[in-house]
Length: 250
Length: 252
Image (tube, rainbow over all chains, first blue to last red; front, side):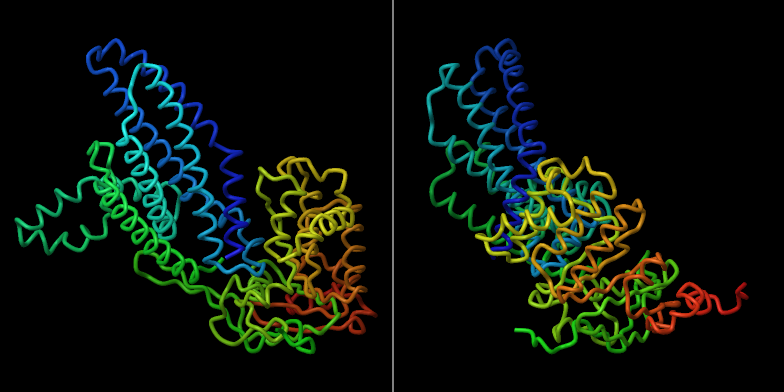
């Protein structure tokens, strides 16, 4: 476990020196620009629009940076053979994998929280009054990042390039927002149910973590349920990734 | 714990066949076949062979990066897939690549922790390793700014900083200038006099001839011949190598 910690620390440092600040600065600039634009376009609903836009942008950027780092990082380590210098040491393969994932997620969480801080400052400067639902929405974002990046790790292991890994993750991520609709379809039409039934339950239920759209739904019970679901889904993905990784030859 | 009287590296009838699947069809290619090899304690053993004859496959099998299709590989009596076996190994890959965001000192710190170097001796070990390979002055530069020779030296430093008993080196002097070759040769000889066992794969016959006491020649994945320094004392290793890999070619 201590190896996973060293690898996580290294991955975190790598992210921090890489695109971490770029993402945060990009977000800050975009937010300020949009706040000016929204002030003109949505005069009545400026705060609501700014709230939604800021949280969506933070979620998208944090998820994208974590998914990209997981997908490209694992494959890059294999292609450049930097992995040889790690795996030729007394390090178990799952420890490398878990450490990599953990470090990348820690960096993505920091980036998300920095963006949230910028967002909050902007909202408060516009006269917004703090609502506890905001904290629930932020928790949902962090859970989504963790869940999506664990899925990205699994898909990176079965894909041959970063691009295909990213594309597959994007497809699952998109479908993950429509699991409710897919399940309703399943209940109505039996033949289709057989066809897609298996797939529907593999797709992560990201709607469950979307406390941003269900403003105020983030009760403690709901958050605990969402955290449990994320932990189980991520654990299943990482376990399968570790199994595939153990079989991999370099 | 590994037995200290066990052979540092043992290949017992090892075969490695690569399987590649493409569109449901499997393609098989040879890695090594029926490899029997026992690397003895304290020796420098050289692996020679033309490209694609199984040298790197042999090294990867000893590191647990590849699993044998048949036969067994043992590092000090243990399966190389076990971390305890790999703890006694130092590996230098051909063209070592380091994380570009790290300085050599940081990179060595990272690898040292993974090799279970105690925290209290970490700094001294890193400084010693950097000094041994002549990189102490460049310790805080980015590894991405390094020349090939400097990367090779850094590669050797990361292999030796946890003081392994067995070194597995893939082309340690490939593409280096004569001074770097000289330094690395001296470093390997020094490690050997300190008791380390070394397995090195190389294309450089002259280097292998100077450093090794025994040499194995791989031909089409098979260990075609094992030679000792007495065998090449008269005519040189190059002649014996050509005789082995291309028996039909007449020698001048």
